[in-house]
Length: 190
Image (tube, rainbow, N blue to C red; front, side, top):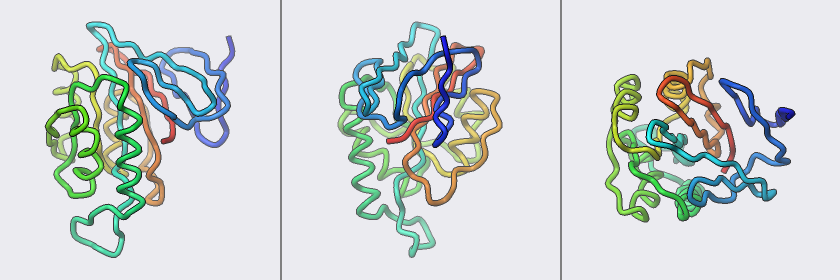
């Protein structure tokens, strides 16, 4: 087996070995536990009773002219709707978001389409959020955060050392598959 790392983005950061033969890192959709990339490559992220699948995104494009609690731009609204379309065919048990307008508006289309309320979390309490996710019966979770909280939560889950997401980047979709002891991180785009 060989490990292919796409130069544009480290597509797989693996705690233990693995294989990837895709030519893109762009998600087309998720159906059940299958992540389907735009090139047709399919990744399986099946969770058993002891496994959690945590999808993490930074909020969509925000209005940078507004300094206090900005809303999403038109492009951000389109991205939030794209996120909802990606998750149409798969299970989500819980959607988490900070209580900022930009994160709530990013989470809203997906949570509404799944018939789920958005569960708020404190951006300063990432370890508590991680513990809550790991202790819950919810297996498939979406966490909408920020350029600093998203990589920080991944670091808590996987023991990685990711840096903050660049302020101009809104299209990262991270997937952590966690067995209760270690997490495997998939870094993709949407």
